[in-house]
Length: 423
Ligand code: ASP
Ligand code: MG
Image 1 (cartoon, rainbow, N blue to C red):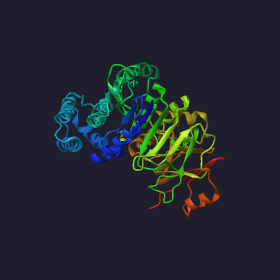
Image 2: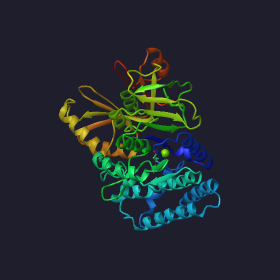
Image 3: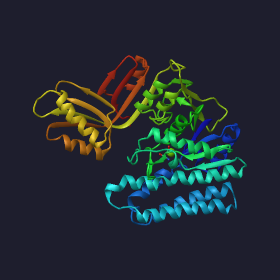
Image 4: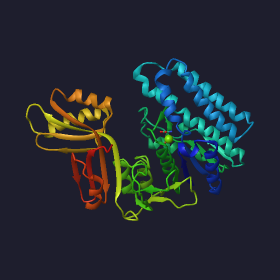
């Protein structure tokens, strides 16, 4: 059994869905192909905008219309004159309206509400695509991921209950019997008492990995709009190199440093069972792409660059002239963990502790507030954190190019630099 994952960009229009269906068609095998799909295009962003105002109300008129028209138009272009699919879209949108009216409006339920609303993106996309594949004669079973992937109650960042999910995968096998494609949603899951949860933004890759692990799949393929795993994000870097083979551990390191090509949690479950992860281009499906697997080194060997923009560097000094030692660090880390701030880089001296974090104003504000009694906090904003794996002095010089280095850390394999963001 193989698992394919298609992200929002690969299904953002009727033409994109036709292309995706074509890829599916050319990869049908005797075992059903498990296909995991995200919400269409930027639907998740749109639904995110709906959340704040909709609890206890009707969804905002304009956004609700956009959502409806976008999906109805794609469905109508794919299967002209099909009432059935239009009716199903209507049912999902009606259930969204009813849901909003009954959601608790208090702030404390925000994350719960978010999951209930935002999950409709994947429900809509898979409903339309399942119809379309069946319409093409590909025998497709639509599966509700919420009946298969079980998480705890941590809304917006559900933590997988592996044992329960493994057990539910039996249902998956029963349902898919006799079908060519088992089509399900990425990103969404449910608690053991069937409350919808989500796995974090861009979490559909992770969904594909969870299913592959629990079903003991032969491989996972993520179809993307880039030719494979590149040594830098082409949006920020003019001359990228495609990495053909990446060891699992290296892929995990890169995702951790912020490589955006795969969701960070995706690789571990696959590594545990030795399931290869292919990254291929839906724009050029005949090209080979990249593979993450049991390799010793990356190939070709070349420096890899990860840029994290909009960073803030906080330097934290104890007010009582004590040293930075375990007790002070305990207070600082306690707050970071309580507020949910991830540290991208840290460094300490006797008198200060510096951390580089994403500049989320609200969270950083809470941190500074929490620290201010015991510590003096200084900060620099508008920074970029650059990570270079397998660096050479030459590439470091090229990246720094006269910029002031605020913090630098170097290991045998990795150089990290905090520098002012280039304008
Ligand atoms: N639709 C979700 C998002 O946009 C999940 C995903 O695309 O992976 O974040
Ligand atoms: Mg997406």
